[in-house]
Image 1 (cartoon, rainbow, N blue to C red):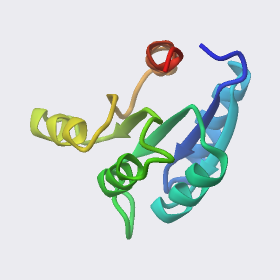
Image 2: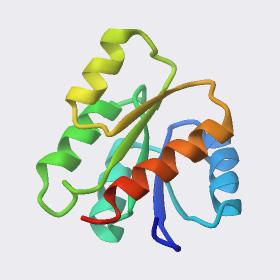
Image 3: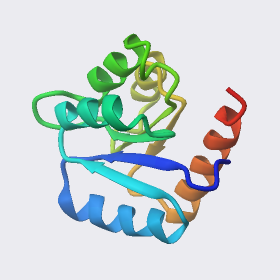
Length: 128
């Protein structure tokens, strides 16, 4: 895992961004936050984070659409995406994975589980 990995945290809920963002910073990550899909795409293109934590259910541009756009752009296609969502049915998970996500975590989730999923994902992609 890169020592100074940058994570882009995308969620339309400010409280969740603040809470998870603080936790990730405490873990030693640089954290970028976006409150919309459009903002996420701009930040991803400009900053090229090591990982994107992406909410699925957002107004205007849904997380699956954001993920598909990230994966379609050669500049951001390599960035792993972990979906965070309240949609936990098998078909939701499958649709998220088909959109190009690396992993899928259902809200509410334990911060330790999130930490472990992030570490595994970053380790998996550190050799690319």
